[in-house]
Length: 202
Image (cartoon, rainbow, N blue to C red; front, side):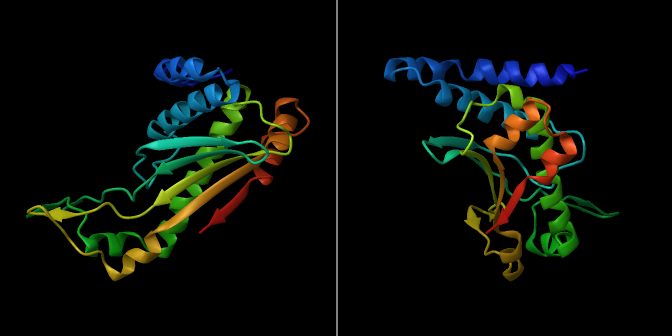
């Protein structure tokens, strides 16, 4: 049975996209652009409310585009999560670079990537029937731009930690439309669909 939250997220995406659809009508209705906008908004809300495991990113603004022959790209600004530490004498909540350096070990960064991948897989599995109908040769590319949030003290930006470079990267999660079609038709199962994901880190 499909969870009610799936419909709520879809409806929210649909409502938020009304203004975009009105603009598209003025330019000449394009079904792919319409469905891309619904997908973008729905996926953004899905990530913000994802409860399978806590994401180690803050999901911010997103934008999507379609290129004929290539497919769809949806970009997300996904800065590293804020880190709060409680002690007996103080609470640190300004994302001081040394706190981030301690928290974001290689293991945590690997876990961060894994959770974004799993959330994206879950979205494709649950919302595949709502996605834009692309050509079989085209693909869906979800791009997460990851870096530390800017830290300001007294209106001045603090310089980044030298170790922030390893926390700054672009994660791309890609599916071919032909694989999504095969899943929609029941020709492959969830496990097989997950195996066909392509992960690129830049």
